[in-house]
Length: 78
Image (tube, rainbow, N blue to C red; front, side, top):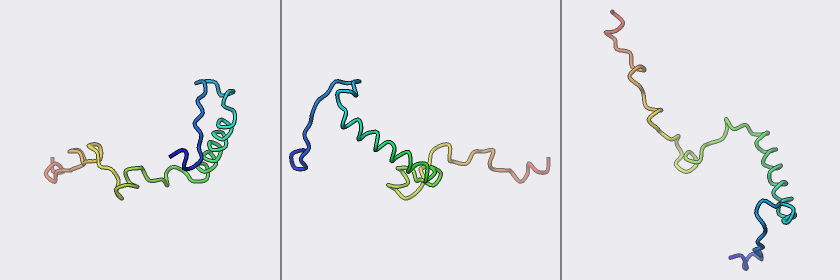
C-alpha cells in the first residue's frame, strides 16, 4: 500500500521531535487548521459519530424517562 502511494516509512526515536522535523512541522500545520475549523464551527452544531453512522441520537439509560418525570394524576389531589 505504501509503495502504491509513494510513502516511505522512516522510524525515529520516540519523544524526540527534533529528530523528525518535517513530519512534526506538518503535524503543527494540521493542528492549526483544526483549531481554526473548530473555532469557526462550534461543537454544539456537530453530530456525534453515532448520529453520523445511524442517523439518530444514541439512547442510553440516562435518556430513558425516569419515574420522577411521570406525574401521577392522583398525586395532585394529595
